[in-house]
Length: 211
Image (cartoon, rainbow, N blue to C red; front, side):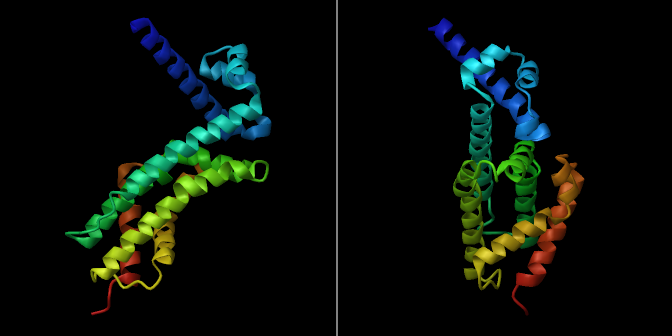
């Protein structure tokens, strides 16, 4: 049993090593520019191991997109569960929520890589990215809209279209982080907090009930 468990751990470690290396190379070079020899070298495996596990570059690319989609869907849906349904201080609680979304979803390494692949390869493989829309983005937007709708019913906000407000909220919290998002860099905590609070204050000026 111990030998079997050890073999399973080794298998999973090798799988993750290949996925991590391939996602980095595909994100850096795109599908066309990616080289399997480079991926194998960065993963610390042989080219034959790569072929044995994934067959060819296209199948490896599909595996990478699937892995990133699954990871980001889970992370973003989890982030939405922390929405402040019963805030004690609306600005502070929404800022803390926005900070989590910025840090864990928008400015994460996996989030950056998935965006790069969507932007660069969606015309070639449109069917691969419908999974992200269905599993991650759509669920996250719906959950955020539901949260905002709840705050409106409780009198905290004045919102006519919760889904529109959700899209506007997400656009605002990432607006001051565009350079980091484009370059795939991770802002420091101070930058993330400042961007999140500024966005929340702008959002509240638009949606807090007058008077």
